[in-house]
Image 1 (tube, rainbow, N blue to C red):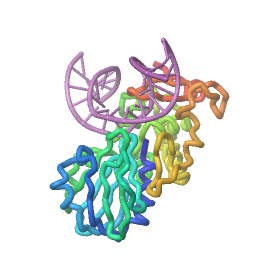
Image 2: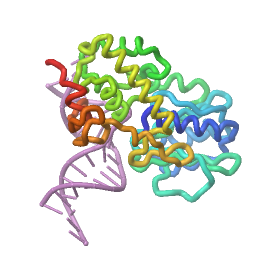
Image 3: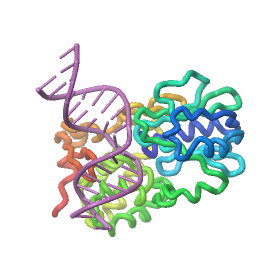
Image 4: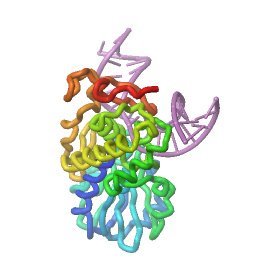
Length: 274
DNA sequence: AGCGCAACCTGGAAGC
DNA sequence: TGCTTCCAGGTTGCGC
């Protein structure tokens, strides 16, 4: 499940190999994964030259000469891989043929993800991106802390809320809460300035470490070249229910918060006072 | 505002 | 072996 670090790694990889390439063909293998009909989407990108690839929140953005942009939301199982031309695979959803004969393929087993295209300037009007909160790696922890200390909701829910802070999913929410010693059910306003600052400092640290390790490969994440990441080997809590805490050996516990499984250490992350 | 829950999907794992 | 059920989770939308 690509979160911020995984999408960032994909974007950096694609930026290196895709910049300067021209989109010379589009194969809408599964048109239901397009945000609009192929008849209107394809003309926005066909013949366009790629100027760069970047990430905003968990969305992958391919910019083109003239200001058009191709956007991919990978959701749970989506992947975008650039490589040699090959036959259509079972999970291929949209395929882009480039001027050097290579293939940019959006594949997604579970069909949650989607592709959209925006004409010049159109990206700014995309409601999804307009509502997304600040980038955690490009924002001062003081500013980020200010966005949760006045809220009454559970901190785990706030971290997952893309309008509060962009790009955080279940893995990095759990990992940063563990590092900060904060229970996932703690309310935003009871974190205190110091607690919130500590949390976002740890969030930045864990995101940077995950990017440096090429992201986390669980289920089927791969980067733009099809390679797995390594950060899953560094998980302290995610997916480790029942295993001993690395810090204190207490068995890690799992509870539901905001409808998601939250794994934490009952001793290092004590229950908030009600 | 916050929270719970269903829906969207598929495949792997666990239970019977 | 073969069936059913559960679970994974990003996002939206609905109701309380």
